[in-house]
Length: 220
Image 1 (cartoon, one colour):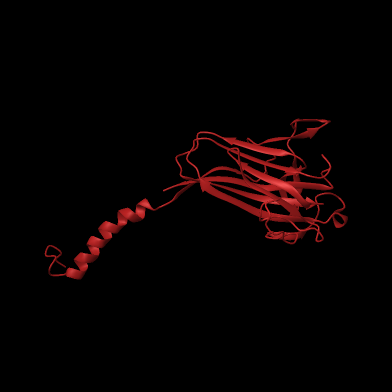
Image 2 (cartoon, helix red, strand yellow):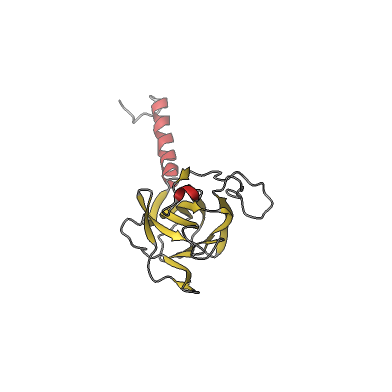
């Protein structure tokens, strides 16, 4: 085939020109993903996470990681009126940041509060319930006037066992996958998760846990 004469094979020549023009544009749209933090707690380590809460009557950073084995996997928990905080620095160049959480809600939740803050800004303030007689706010915000849904709305799994020795009398557990994606360009990032409700430190009556926490950044 002789391509030196473009008029001899006009369709072939046109296709080559269009390919040359479109290829750089396609490459520019390619999204690069970097996982900058991931923890499934299988090694028993917090790996940069700090857990604060009530201990012996005072509030502060807890002296030992609360990592348990629940329903066939390691989890960060049991947590009750606690704060989980992650600080990341020197992130690679990015335009988008995504937080993915596997959240377990254990036992006697009755639309109790759970909050996610990203860089000090509240991204989700909601309530969960395991009691079929008490509706929950999630996936909507708590107290913003939106309609409540039945307990377990948008859960990945419901009817799971409780986290302590008598699950049948404590409303069991439910599992949620929570994803927050937003524009972000800073080199630093802070994630904070917290809850409020029930009796402080009574983790068998009401608690929550994390099965996995992943933070990813993207750039075009």
